[in-house]
Length: 497
Image (cartoon, rainbow, N blue to C red; front, side, top):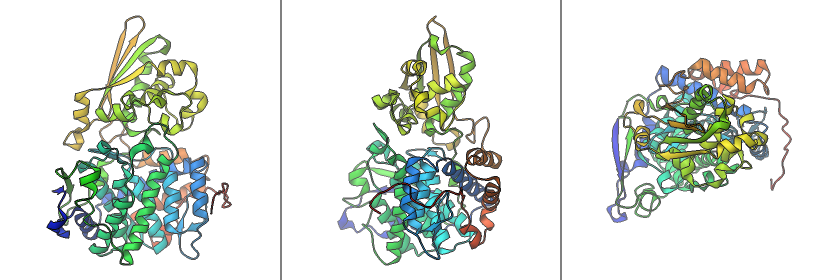
């Protein structure tokens, strides 16, 4: 790996393109080697994972609305598939509909470092373009691996959350790079697309703060759609703000740490194997990733805390990010509100810990049901739970060695009789370093579990056969890489279109 230093450059200096981060990312997209077998297998796993969580959300209101919008854009002879139906639509709208479906339940993969991300959000736009333009499985697999590589590099080196910038700013860039790799575009074209994608997908973090709404699911879909449109414009010869990262009035100077700041972004050396996707991990539970290990810990502690009515206080000692994003350090009263939205509850570790401790399990629908959130004994327990930042857990969260990073916490349960019960969990059971790491069998089981109610067995088997052979697929098979749940193509919602 090569660590690239990124800093603001005055306009008068005329920073050469070869020294700009966007150009280096474009070069990676253009020159990346074919992925290794283990990377190809993991790409296939994540395609399965995305389909699993998308299928489980097909009838949820945000997904229905996004699908309705997409179905208003038929593509004729070409086009891209929309999850749940057999229709083909324009690729940017397929990416939109499928991106919302993938993200709705907050149930797919994650990467945590200087910032945090869901790199599986790259798959819908890249797959949509591959289907529309007739690309084969090998090209699709390489493109997804490139997008993961770029996403991991940016999230490793550049923190957006510190400045309340939403993480989709990294996603627009990685999706544009992946599409550029898919289409084997010239470096210049990919460079311009990356600049446009970053410029158009920079937004504040308010989408994940306070009263969190359905836009949380739409935001990454917006970035994927914007990336497709950016590549299209760049292919037509249209340029971008430049230099997009280093410009005197650019991203670093005014939206991040200022003109004197330096960032270090690690990228593979020329010809070096793509490995970024292997540093990412998926979810066993439908909840914010930083809750995964703590939900597992709550399940384990349940046997030691049989009567939650006797709990007087629960303190979760955890990292800065967990405390301030999903804990009481966020200072969001909505995180303790029984009437809060599902999107808010899955960003409330006090709520999730309370339910997991009482139920000994976590369900992507039942655990968020209004009647579950408003149960009096749950509300009473929930409001006894606080988080505190612990420097040791913050250090573990940001460990230089990815294998040493820890995203959980230490929990202290105080009972009314003075008994104190403690437990700690560093990583989720499903994490590569956890007790039950996810492999192909677990991805398939997750798909079968989530898709079984909506998709016939024959259709599930057809999809799994294609996805498991992803690098070998012909163009016609890539076009068929969809899950048809037999949903009506007649829009169920109304708007302008």
